[in-house]
Length: 284
Image (cartoon, rainbow, N blue to C red):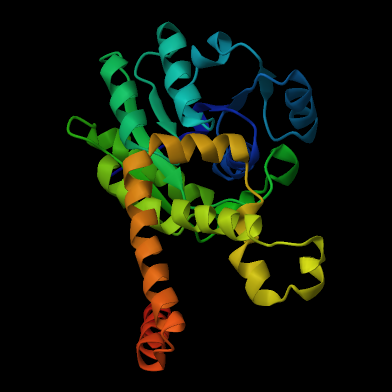
C-alpha cells in the first residue's frame, strides 16, 4: 500500500482530555496540514492553541469538520455516538472517522447504523493512559510502545482500515491489533475493567484512617488505578454490564475458594492456588 500523505491532510481531534490531548501532541510527528480541535471548554482550547499543539480550536464542530480528512473522537462512548449523530451533515465527503472509547460493540453498532455512505468509521482503543485525567497530564509518550486495538466490521473499507493503522504506527504505538467489537468488550472486561473494580473495592475496604501508615508497595500497586475518572468508568462498567458481571462472578468464586482454604486451614489447596497464580503471572 502506498504510504498516506498526511502532509496534505487536515485532522480534527474531538475532546482535549488526557487521550485527546496526547493524540493531538503525537499527531504533530506526522506533520499534517492542519490539526484542529473541538472541545466544550474554550479555556482549554485557548491554552492548547498557545502551546502550538493545534492549529486552532473550536467549541462548535461544524467549521473544522467540513475540511477534515480524518476525525478522531476522544470523548466518552455515549457522547461519541451523539457527536456523530449531531454533526453528520458537516463531515467532509469521504472523511474517515475513528474513536478512542474503551467500549466498542455499542459504539461501533450505533455509529455505523447512522453513517453516510461516503464516510468510513473504524473503532479504536489505545491501551494507554494515566491515573490522572485532563489535558494537563497529556503527553505523546503515552502511546510509545502501546498496543492499539481496532475493531473493523463487515463493510469496513480496507483503505480506511490501513489508513488508521498507519496513523496508529505514526503515533509511536507498537502495533495495531484487529478484533471484533464484541470480542474487544469481552476481553477488556477482564484485562481493564475488573482491575478497576478490584482497586475500588480494595480502597473502600481499607478501614481506618491510619491505614496509610502501613501501606507498602503491594497495596500501592493493587490500588494504583483506583484514582480513576468516576464519571467515565461508571459509564464503561454499566455499558459493558454483562461482560463485567461475568468477570466479577469468576473473580468472586476464586476469592471464595481461597477463603475456604484459609478457613479450613487447608495449606495444600491454598499453596496450590497461590503457586498456580504465580505461574500464570510468570507466563504473562
